[in-house]
Length: 234
Image 1 (cartoon, rainbow, N blue to C red):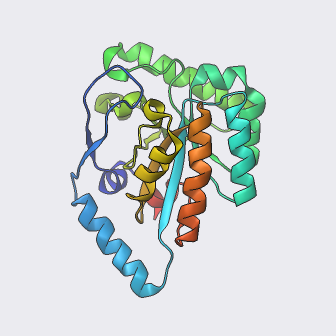
Image 2 (cartoon, rainbow, N blue to C red):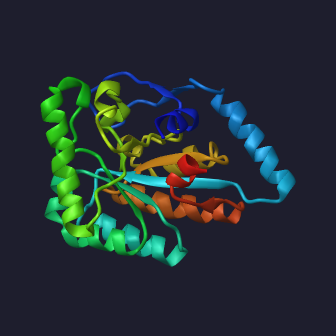
């Protein structure tokens, strides 16, 4: 499983700024050149007449207002998304977690307090992850299979001890920073391609509005929105 994930998800080089996903992610493939692989996949899809697939993911929720609005819009558009939850937010709003789960979205772990796993002792890191798993599984009845490390900073020795698959991204419009809907939309749609994973945050009104425009635009272009686990297990 880990080798398969390595093949599909490139290594991350990212500056440690101490802020949520603050820098563009520089993708450096450890197995195949990512852009080349995805271009070839896109060409293959065109030849076979298949629609390109893309995943949209949201970090840092649930938010008591914005996440509910987002879920309404996703349901209306018949789109499933992945939500990587901060444990303390999941514990505070279990009814939203329940709705995410019941409506078929993927729910993953984003640590309990949104911590940099590289900067804390391993025992503390494991506790952060375990507490978030408990907050989620107490509602869904299932322990998350996937984790997104805050800031995209992976801790390899910790991953080896976890029974959770890290999921990163390759389109980051820095929505937390701009809060400009048009700018967020433009950054995403110009980079969209088959197999891409979009990173947004469901704790901002601008990100929710941008998400709807992104989905509408890409669906009109023929993209199918899928959950990121489809890329992992294909």
